Image (cartoon, rainbow, N blue to C red; front, top):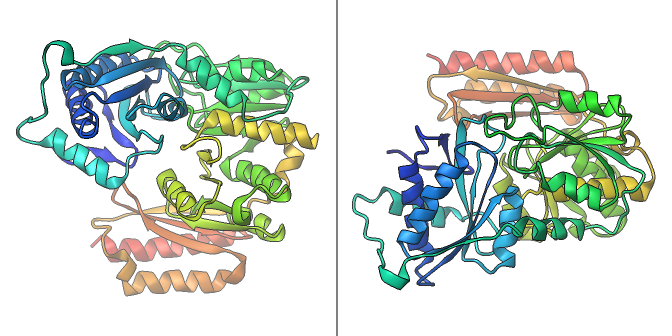
Length: 447
């Protein structure tokens, strides 16, 4: 068995790659690891709506209890609810069973530390070592020391109370369509916005275990765009399967992605003196228009490599309080320790309400520069950074763009691809520049 943990926990096709046996071992390993400081470690466990979730939940619980751990079972809740409730309940760790925006056949298992943050690499590596160890030396208590299970359905209510407490705004007179992706937000998100006074029109809020993310949610927003126009709504909200991210649609049916959400909320916070060090954290994939918008208003954008964990690391290291990704994974660190699609949506709608302007007008604070992304399939993606021909091709493109754009070349984390992104004022010119680099990369690395 190879490396288990990817960028966001253990993922795979449920019952094929992510089996109940593996879930059981993960449960035992988790109890063994977190039981080093607490003989009967406490875990908070939540899942999304996938048909395989109950199966994996049962196996995880069995593994934890067999090693003496205690489990508080939340049922179907958003991923950020697990992060929040892990802290709120004083648990040793939290666990989420979800594959986020992936197809229904997939599933995943990821852990949070007791402070609500994702596991550091070193802890994750130790957990993996325990799972893959040739001999299971983790304790197997008997009698009264076997672990226990507590069902805590009121956890969802506690999380909803928390989300609504992050704003003082009144959403009455707002009509909002919410696409729940038939996922973990199907109950929570409509309840949050109704409690805040909005007229809510739920979409894809009838999960059956196999319809999660199917032609809906943040990765397929077309139905939401259509519904916003049909209902003459003020805006639409689209979650992914586990509700840790959000994409929004304005009253004209146009998409408002994570970059625009960060621009609207970040610049609003900047204007009120609430943005720490006048700085937003984004990844290298965020549009240059976001950087220009902040520069124009006296703020700045710090960039990290792709991945919300890197955004969070930079935020914690420097004390920044807002960061995120173009995909809609936004972290309001003063509210939660991970990307939270419900908190993000509430903060955005609060700005709409406070400013008294339509979302389309607020989004105009940022102008998106054209981006062109092409891929070069290669035999070996290692060492491309030192290749003289590739470096020369990139340098040539950067010289042509000057201060008006940028070029980003990076290796895919999961496929034998080199990804080339060019950004600037003219799309046709960008396409030419990106394809010129693509040809060089292919010629150099596909031999």
